[in-house]
Figure 1 (cartoon, rainbow, N blue to C red):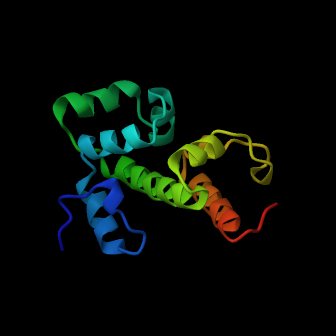
Figure 2: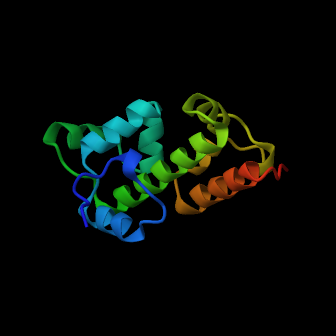
Amino acid sequence: METDNLTFRSLDNNDIYKLIHATRKGVDYKTFNDFSATYPLNPSTWSKILNISERTIQRYKREKKRFDPIHTEKLLLVMLLFKKGSDVFGDIANFLIWVKSENIALGGVKPIDLLDNSFGIHLVKDELTRIEHGVLA
């Protein structure tokens, strides 16, 4: 099973063993950078989502380090969520508008503000599934 050339575009929710291996190995900075270039969020937002400082993210870049497994797992969950969101909304721009806007179905909270833990990520994913199936709150 080839997992060393993981890109966010190659992620598949159904390939659980590849995701487990990638989590254990850690995502490299290039993969994160490619993802964050496609789904641009400011550095402080990434810092909040990943629960690491901006300086640590910059150190990963400078030292060409892989993200720790705990941060990789969160990053992979967010990558999968963003891919799903882009599919549901038809493109990245529409999804980014939605994810940064207050959402009545999520208690008036912006979906982006829920991505700092796995419970919030699952809540946002569930809301995307409802939208995908036409079940609006």
